[in-house]
Length: 455
Figure 1 (cartoon, rainbow, N blue to C red):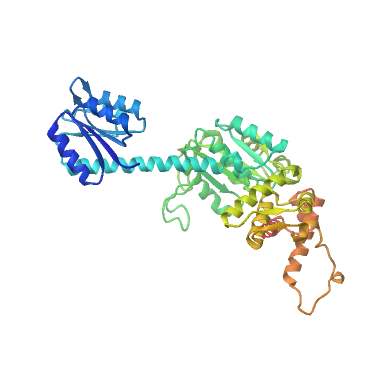
Figure 2 (figure 1 turned 180 degrees about the vertical axis):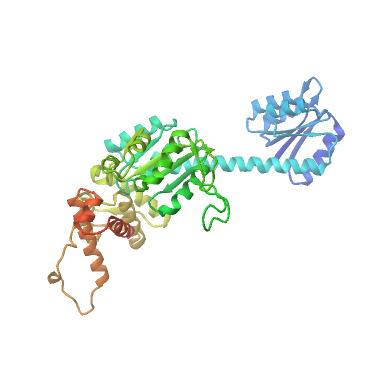
């Protein structure tokens, strides 16, 4: 946008005054007292704003707006009128005018209105640009996979995206559940409205209700102001309830009501509030098992499981590893301004034998670390961390301590990581069972996995 203005008014004195004033404000201006000449000028170049009189010889300003928009659909318009009645103003707005101004007016006033019009247009374009960026960022080009299981996921997302059906995304940690949720949102009719994500496992149980539904001032100690919740913030958009399997039974009842009736009640309030939301939930747990064990409400499970989408573990789609590696290498090399790095055939063999308990997130972290630390060149199997090939399963008798010493912490961390991998392999990725095998709390195991995946 170059802030160019086309002025059309049959009063020549006003036309000249506007031409001088607007040019003095730094605008590119073409001013005409003949509307047909003004239309011809628009055919020659695209103007950003049309400033037009409502009453013109043999036509109307509204008709000129219509014809200008046929030539240049993006043009904004402001109507000048000495007939400042409500019907004429409403008709002008319906025809697509940004605003109208009644004659006589001060030049400074019209200058202020024009500046606001350009600010409005600039903000609108920024919003459109942001939307395009978000659609690109969370499009399928960033959810990599050519395997049959992933193609099935993509097909299902395309099919259900532009509905309001509730979706339950399941899969192990690191498989990309939130990326799928965002892909659904940004392909839906709600794409321009908020996408609000809540990690139900990361928020203490005592705070989660307030986080979801908001609270009134004085509802509890520390509630010094009234605060809206995530359901309110997602109104007319999408709320993503991640790790919903970790939600307490008490809170499950309130979420069920919100899903059934599309109403919420802030903590400390006696009034219901309607919300227009689409719900996408995700979990790495088997909710059917949780229902059988009494840890998850059956009615909530069926309310969530309208459209189930299961994301396969990376070990179940190993044919995607090579294209994932290529994608992450290009991404991190570009971000770090490094030359392209390549993997040797034996390095790919190591990657394809490994079980990837941290899934795509673990692979992404590995590639980022290699790009940052190695910079460029060829990565062989020997350059990869020992944990990938199982070479860290050692006993103290296998270790020779050189004069220079050893990094005990690093070796202990690698040994622990190897044991965790073995337990996950034995349990086929079931974290509850793996924690039992290692005599750990499930939350402790998850924290250790996050630490391993982040390295």
